[in-house]
Image (cartoon, rainbow, N blue to C red; front, side):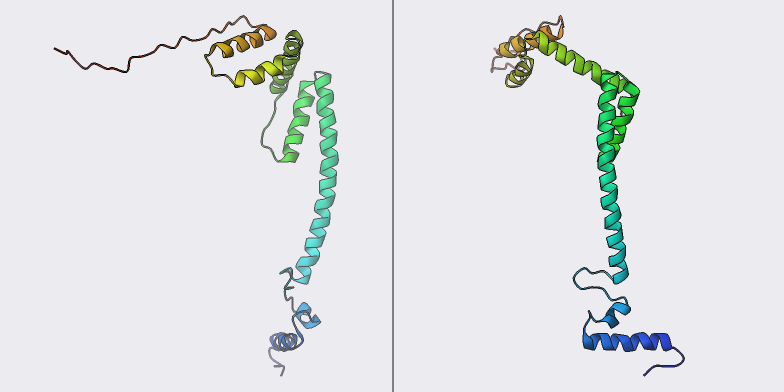
Amino acid sequence: MINKNNWEASFVEEMEKLASIFGKNHWFGKRLGRKNPKTGLTNKETKSKVKADAADKADTATAKKNLDSNVKKRDAGRKSKDYKATSEAQNRINKAKGSKVRHTESSAKAQHAEQKSYSAAKKKSGGTLAADIKARKSHKKGSAEYAAIQNRINKAYGSKKVHTAKKIEKKSSLKFFGNVD
C-alpha cells in the first residue's frame, strides 16, 4: 500500500517488490536504477560508458594521425638540421606515447652528431663496425682480443687512443704474518 505522506519511498518500495517478482531485468528494475548483473552498471552508466568509448576511439584515431604527422616533422627537421623543430616534434611523440623524456635543441643536435659520426665510422671501417661492436661484447675487458677489437673501433671513429692487453699478475696464495723464526 502507498503511504500518502511519503509516497516516493512507498512507490520505490512497491516497484522493488514487483521487480523481485518479475526479475531484475524487468523494466521496473531498470526504472529503479538497478544494475545489470552482466556488466554491473546501471542504464545511465552504460550509456555514458558507450559515449566515452566512442570518444576514446575518436581520440585514438586523431592521436595516431597526429603521431604520424609529428614523426614526419621530426624527420624533416633532422634532414634540414632544424634541431628546435626536431626536439619539439620528438617531445610531442613522447607525450603521445606516455614517455616523460623531454628533448632540448642541444640534445637533438648531439644526437644528430652521434648518428653522423657512426655512419662516417661505418664507412671508414669498411662496413665492419657493427660486427666489431658485437664481437667486442663477447670478450672480457682487458683481454688481448678485446683490445684489438677496441683499437679497430677507435680507428674507425678517428680516435688516437690505443688499448693494450692488461698483464695479469699471479699472486701467491701463501700469506705470511709477521716474522717466522
